[in-house]
Amino acid sequence: MIVAVLGTGQRGRDVAQRCVRAGHEVRLRGTDASDVMDRVDEIRRAFNRDLSAGIDGTTGLESAVSGSGIVIDATDGGTDSHREVVAETETMVEDETLIAVSDTSLSVTAVATGLRSPDRAVGLNLVDPPDGAIVEVVIAEQTTAATRDRVTDFVESLDASPVVVRDTPGFAALRLELATIAEAVRMVEDGVAGIRDIDRTFERGDSDRDGPLVRADRHGLETVLTALEDLADRLDERFEPPALLRRKVEDGQRGAVTGEGFYVWEEGTPTAGADPDPDVPTRDSEPEFR
Image 1 (cartoon, one colour):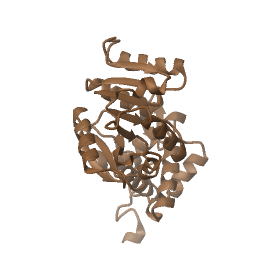
Image 2 (image 1 turned 180 degrees about the vertical axis):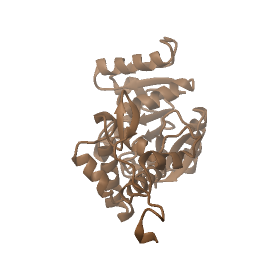
Image 3 (image 1 turned 180 degrees about the horizontal axis):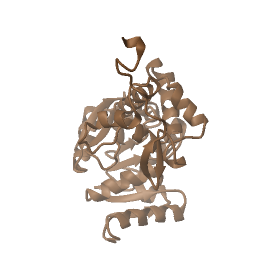
């Protein structure tokens, strides 16, 4: 299948690389020619510079989407920007072409109002890590069962399991991720356990998945804070950011990118908890427990 991926940011790169790995013919479209080719080269390097890897880059929208079976809009911008992108795309593709939006901060239903045939709109989100086993399929109010089934088939072609979710703020994966991170931060605030021990509890000692606090640092604490604020506004106070998270962002401790968040980072690796472990009292060390 020809897959058109719009956007050369990290989301666009991840989507394009996943589709190339699955054997699809990918056309990556961006607005800056140099940036497009840099991204194409990155993806080819991931495949040992195999020039037969099925990806080409372009700055032309029509040359990207013409003849495609699915267009995945991974551009940056708000609802209006995505609505304009998909509306213009629709004029250049066949009636049966699927149009997907890859952005966890947007309502797919709202973006789909820009289409003449909104029944073919759907959300498509790679769940971290982007080469992992799960891909979210977001069903907008306009999405038909036929579109859902075609998109889940496409996801299975990526050697991934489709998770079908309703078009609600944060969808499923992001809501679970943020809820887990927020509770882990509150546990640090409350002195329940040390940072590493909280993460180890989540990992259960043998998981390949990082704990919630190291993942928060990798995401960037400012990004996590903004996402929690957004969900708190659109859902409820369950997602109100913990005070400790706000304080770290205000103090410039923003995670791996700054070298310190909940962990101290060296060369991209967490080396130690940034805050001292709490003194967990025993009965004979704390008079009030006697």
